[in-house]
Image (tube, rainbow, N blue to C red; front, side, top):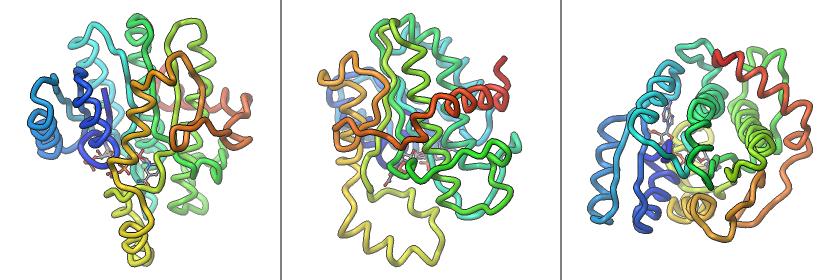
Amino acid sequence: MITGASDGIGLEAASQLAAQGHHLVLVGRNPAKVARAVERLRTESPDAVVESFVCDYAVLDDVRRLAADLLAAYPRIDVLVNNAGGVFDKRTTTADGYESTFAVNHLAGFLLTELLLDRIIASGRARIVTTASVGHSRGTMDFDDLGLERGYQIMRAYSRSKLANVMYTRMLAARLGGTGVTATCLHPGAVATNIWAGAPAIAKPVLGVAKRFLMITPEQGGATLTYLATGPEVDGLSGGYYEKNKLKEPSALAQDEVVGQRLIETSRTLVGLT
Ligand SMILES: NC(=O)c1ccc[n+]([C@@H]2O[C@H](COP(=O)([O-])OP(=O)(O)OC[C@H]3O[C@@H](n4cnc5c(N)ncnc54)[C@H](OP(=O)(O)O)[C@@H]3O)[C@@H](O)[C@H]2O)c1
């Protein structure tokens, strides 16, 4: 199961996983884009089973509905890839009143994972993979102003959300010890995807050049996801942060268990989990 599967890294990873013959469930927010993604995968890999769900990660009720639909549809979930994400040039809030970057990139995936966790554990040697970013290393975690009401900047918000991805992965891996389920996260590289459309207008000319000459392709970015989702090399390995299929040490803050524990407790409160 892959979120953010309608475009970019998620779509390419889905294509690679379909080619491996897996039963795939794509999740995206735009029904027409999701339908196109399903059609592409079915054409490329006629033997693969490809199904889809639509969910807007900016609406936590929609995430709850998605989780209920998935639990009703699938008696087992072997791989959950939390990949949906974006950047927001200006500070906006979601339907639930949370800053959009933190809500879409962290809270929604956090809630989905928590709601599916018992089913994932019951599925045996399952994997939970999250697309984080090297940008996590510049992230801070100010619990008094998580939504950056003071001093919002696009990269401050993005780095914080990606730091939350790495912290949650590590805390989850510790919690899942002994279950056979692993939790890992990754930086896919600087990838020429649609995510950069959300960058400020002033940065777009430079980004256009970078996309063309410096960034890797979505297929290459998706390959790191595919590696963590099904690669035999990482079977049983949990808690790691990966770049280019190599284990890397995340930032010191990402490894701070006190801050990590507070992030989990705060996230549970924000999404209404008791
Ligand atoms: N590109 C990079 O260089 C880079 C580097 C580090 C990390 N990442 C991470 O990689 C992940 C995938 O990004 P990408 O580069 O592949 O960008 P992308 O091409 O824009 O794909 C993002 C995916 O997330 C979905 N999404 C965005 N907002 C959503 C929402 N509110 N509800 C549900 N789905 C939503 C998008 O849906 P739509 O198709 O409807 O837009 C799309 O399927 C993100 O988590 C990003 O932070 C990317």
